[in-house]
Image (cartoon, rainbow, N blue to C red; front, side, top):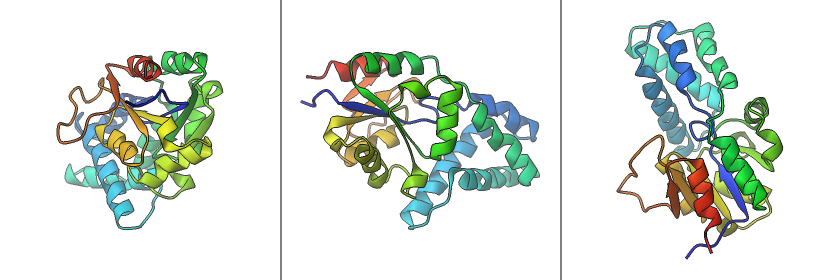
Amino acid sequence: MPSRPAAVAFDVVETLFPLEPLRPRLVALGLPPHALELWFTRLLRDAMALDAAGRFASFREVGAGALEVVCGQHGVSCGEAEAAAVLDGLAELPAHPDAAPAFRRLAEAGVAVATVSNGGVGPTRALLERAGLLPLVARVAGVDEVRRWKPNAAVYRHVCDALALPPERVALVAVHAWDVQGARAAGLLTGWASRLERRWQPAMPPPDVRGVDLVEVAEALLALG
């Protein structure tokens, strides 16, 4: 049986901060409402492909490129100004309402809180600070520090090293099954919140704990022996 972690690292985009506020920005470009999901899925897929091929590009670079492709598929013009109009909105995302309570519950129990994002450290720190979450976070980690993308094991091991803890003492919490699988393969404990995907991908081994939101996942991690 897995043991209670000494630290919990949270994914950032969609786990702590929803992308929904970007939907009107995409629609303003002339894209259909469902383009938000198309864009973000392409962003992640292209980033993972680059990583698998041994190349690195930043979140903003891949995001702008993915947006250009989606716009092209829909016959919409997308230059630097149009891409910036969407990507600049990332800095204004509000936190999910379950983020702060989950952070506080872990902190009260003496468990360190960290974040590990496919974005950069600077933008992530700014998001956390704007949401009032930064004082509760012991370490902000990003792919720009290791120049690899999740689910590469190097990213998860980097946050463990930054916390000075072995992987088996750190849990990764995310709303994406693929992210949970990456952490599991790197030796971390795992927690999955179902509020985004609703159903676990059955082709993947299950997470160590799960819950409908981040608070339930935090409680389940704290309940481990």
